[in-house]
Amino acid sequence: MRETPTWRIPFGIVSLFILLIVYGVVIARYAPGIIGSWSGGAQTVVYVVLGLVWLLPLKRFLIWMETGNWSPPE
Image (cartoon, rainbow, N blue to C red; front, side, top):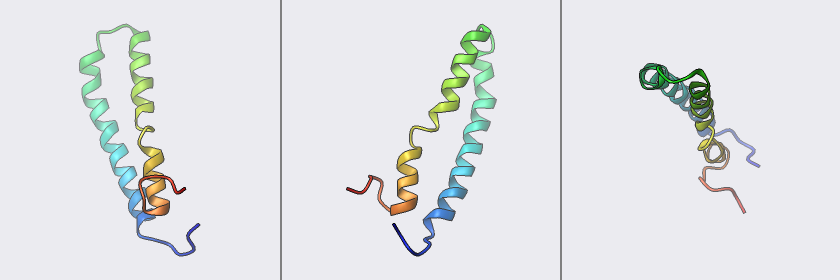
């Protein structure tokens, strides 16, 4: 565990916040035009998947914020 603060944590939090806003705006702008005519159930599935997709790279990103490496320490 590190004992001193690093620049990675505030940079990571701000960049994660900005990237999530951009991702949300892109989804809100383009998804309704693509899936707007689908049934409600199909739209729900797509939006749930799109709502969870951003979690995939989050683990490695949090590891980088804490350790400075993209892979977990051994």
